Amino acid sequence: MAVNQQIANRLAGIRKILMGAHQAGSAMSDASRGSERATFVNRFLREVLTPQFRFGEGDATDVAGNLSGQLDVVVEYPWVPSLPIDGSSPRLYLAEGIAAVIEVKSDLAKQWDQVKKTSDQLKKLERRYDSGVIFGGGMEPPNRIPLFAVGYTGWQTMETVREKLDEGSVEGILVIDSALFASVPLFQEITESGDLSLWGLIACLHQVTNVISCLTKNVLFKYCEDGPDAAIDCGGI
Image (cartoon, rainbow, N blue to C red; front, top):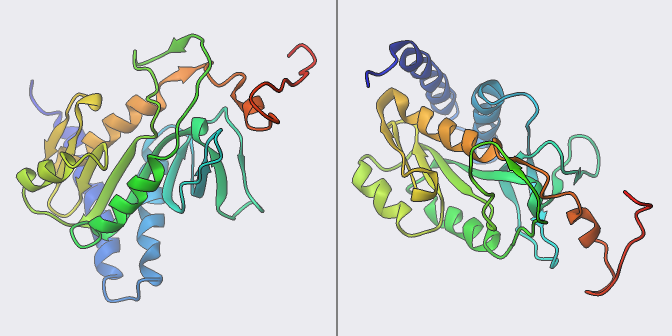
């Protein structure tokens, strides 16, 4: 099937905007370069994904009380609450309320150990869904929260990207400057290069955010039970 050149051209423009932001901040301090994460969210994720999804940062916890540590970008399902201190502060997320986590790095090759550390912490969390009906995508939400790694710069060959993916730390890798994307079989083992590399990440995020379910109906009650046999009177809800 021929590539849709209109989409490819638009993605090429977005990629230039992202790399322009990276190049403008390349000489700045690490703290100042945190704006690259905001650029990725505001110039790409928030503009491409549908508006009901919220993007934020913070920590995640599960029913067992495990904590993830700081997460760069959280893609949040719209029907599960999360807890801020105030409107702009990092949030505390419930594991079942997270569609995906994205680690955004200036140089993914140099900062890969940071991604692996996040992965190790995130893997401690388990999502516990109720029985119910799943709508959309035909994909059941995995028990582990999907993690994607994005680097403005990083590896230059698809072979190296695939090698890093095979380590099992993340579900997908995007390197913006070399225009490479690859994902694990859970996401149809997508491999894209060139202008369509951004499209690979979009396709994976669409898949995880499109799993609309009622599987979280009673999950919230589990977070405040006092022991395994405790029950909450929900007034018939």
